[in-house]
Amino acid sequence: MNTPPETSASNQTPSLTQLRVVVGALVGGQVMFLAVVIVLLAAVQPGGFVPGSTMALVLGVAVIGVAIGTTVAQVVIRGGVIASVRAAVEQAANPDEAVSRVGQAFTGLTIIRAAMFEGWGLFGVVSLMLTGQWVFVLAPLASVVGIASVFPTRDRFGAFLDRVLGDGDEMSMPERG
Image 1 (cartoon, helix red, strand yellow):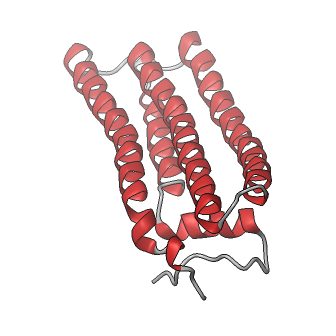
Image 2: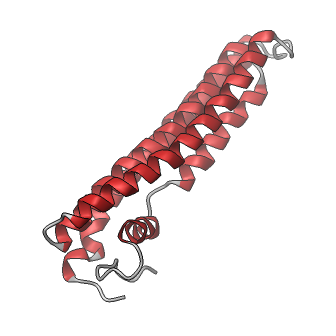
Image 3: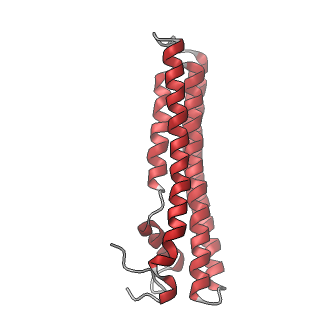
């Protein structure tokens, strides 16, 4: 791919590094909270809680509902952000400004999507804490997988840039390898 100098990988790397730290912190906080809850549950109730409580059922349905709802919301939000940034890129004065706008949108979208995954993961941890039902450990584990699916990489940024700019645009990202 031909790349103008103003869109070089070195211009994008620092923002991706910072974004990776933020997204990694979301995972780290969730994992630490889960570990604390597991240790506390093991100390308080070594034999486990009584299965089948009404609270566990209600929270289970709620966790699943929140997981599905936020996942669907992410698709809608992503589409809206892409449409919005396309319009902003069309009005950009130069390629630098266009890439900057795409980078800002990518950063915001990545943080929002990762936080949405983290939200239902934390809801699962709180449900585990309240009910003692170990099945709720699945929520934060699935949440971590979801966060990994939006973890910022140069390839993901390039794909987002391509999606925003569409096919056949003159501006492109550097070769990714």
